[in-house]
Length: 368
Image 1: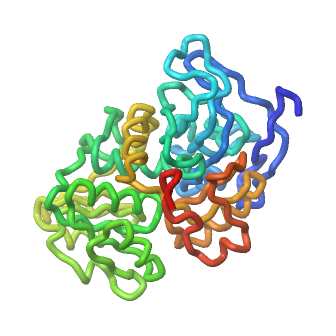
Image 2: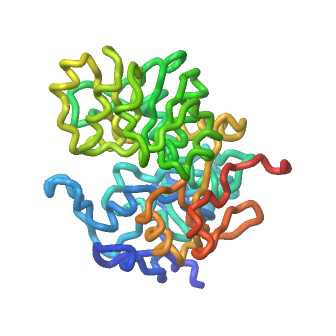
């Protein structure tokens, strides 16, 4: 293959998974302050299918202007191929991971579903040494989201949906309910809340109970059998990993002075009720941060936080991965493997139908 051409998954129009095409694409070129990464694995996230479909859930004035063909994807793990002249923190051969250009790359400039991607050095960190590329790629967006909501915001960019800056709340000794506890953000939120000393009430489907309890959840609610808002009360914090118009139902489970953090806040219209109940509602937009990823690499290496992979697919099977995402009830994350290696989790499309986590958790190399 020519050095100027790579394989990538591109789309030439908005639509369903069928618009994703595995084809030749131009190699990205380095700009000042960037590193070129030879991608080994790509993590999938909701913004991937939102963009694929044209961000139809957003008001027209918020929809980014897109130029086709575009390449989806923000979360990558791989090896540094080259660095720009002004980059001193990384060198060719370094194993790295990154959430590339988010949210600045909402219009498809991130270009993760490919053999190579460029990334600002400020958004890159050395990959956790004791996990493989597949698990590292599954972490950035979801783990940064949980971290920035619960532990450290790490930026001062104003959220246009609320007048106040998002601030994490104390967790030690508090009762935290996490809705969508088996999902990408949810399974990290459970672990971070437990790490900080909270009692965690996890809400997910019954088929995910064993998985979620293995993350450390103290109590489990199967939302298919019990409405969580009718089952609990006096909660200090609700992290709603589903969010949207239904997030207001959790206001009544909170004690006065409590907080509701919807990960997806669009559609919430309960501000007046929250004020009457003395409840704070706050959200933020996750933003790329190499500095925070470096901190999180330490937690991943130590096993404080573990990554669960639901299913892994080859890059050329990105369409099938998006179909799996649409089926729902994902335990952890979905990944695309670009370069197969001994430690990577891989699962065929046929195997993915059983709905169990493919890799469960990352394990330090050399252990059973």
